[in-house]
Amino acid sequence: MRVIVQRCENAFVKVNGQLISQIDIGLCLLVGFTYGDTEVTVNKMINKIIKLRIFPDENGVMNKNVLETNGSILSVSQFTLYADTKNGNRPSYIKALNGIEAKKLYDYFNKELAKSINVQQGVFGADMEVTFTNMGPTTIILEM
Image 1 (tube, helix red, strand yellow):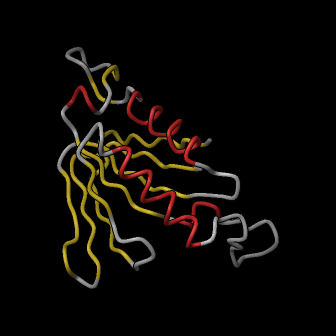
Image 2 (cartoon, one colour):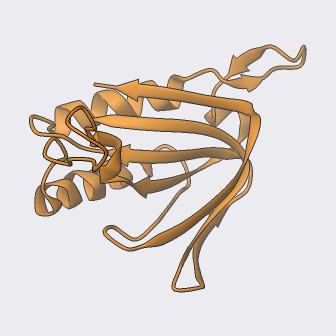
């Protein structure tokens, strides 16, 4: 499992020009799955995301997590996180988990994450327009 975590001031997803979801301050997560990922993997990743201290405290030091800032999460599925370009210019996605299994894990990820925080999400498998304002910029790559 691979997640790109972006601290954001705001974020939203559109599909076919229609606003699907949006958040104010929080995290924009680009989420990808690979073979071998399980619900255990997902739970470990959720724990890591929730505890990630990348928001400033009163002294401007990155010392608070998303919960301590009353933030939200915009979760977007992105199989291209497992793109492999070692053999040319056209990416191979053979390491990305198949759509049926990835959707199950993505749905589980969002359901479990929503037990702790407000989660908005994109549309699995859709061609989405994702827009966000990265604060910092702060971008963290997490992998399980």
